[in-house]
Image (cartoon, rainbow, N blue to C red):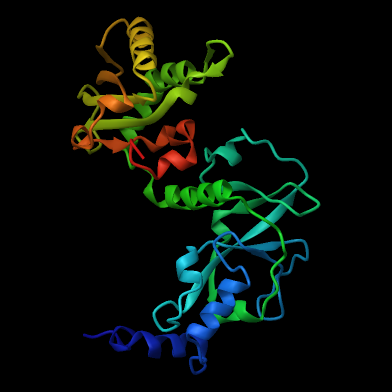
Length: 293
């Protein structure tokens, strides 16, 4: 049996969802949005057409910039927005600023009397794109780095690695605690966290299923460091931390590798997945990049 909505064209579906005929929209309107500065991360206040009960809330555009200014309204009828609430203080290394918190993000802004907005990913909703033409945005600025980090934070929400619950439980017993403490510890002069020298962390595991107690998972971790000398140093330190390159612990057959960026080819990563549990350690920008980009 055919679903009636599925038989509609996108233009007809757009008309039905908005209860009106599609407005006239083309290159002229798209250029108007572009010239007005409508891009991803643009910030604006609620309006008569886009209301909100809280007068202190802001809306932040989540949709990619190229879609925001697309001339084809039938193909791209909507933009996604999220609610942003002002922060009186901003810490650049807080969990919400570096992407550790997958549900809330702190977006630093300029030309405002407060330093940042807190954005809740669960507040997102779609609105008609042509409404932006009539809206005056707030006039705040967002740096290219902050905008890229914001895009990576949204992407991370959907692309988080899915590990079996039983595997996560076993990893947390010993392995993750030791590795997390190791990566967060500061070393060198001037002192900096070890993870600042790590480009990315990758994982290979099997089987991808919930196992009964007594049956072991096979886990491999790959740490890709910025420089060869750092990779050699971390490899020696991890060998000392775990007592060897491989061990059996908590019903896990665990091993690790530490390589430098120039030693790692894309073909080496076949069968590996970004370990998004730790993507925040190497930065949001890195989370959406290939190892060498």
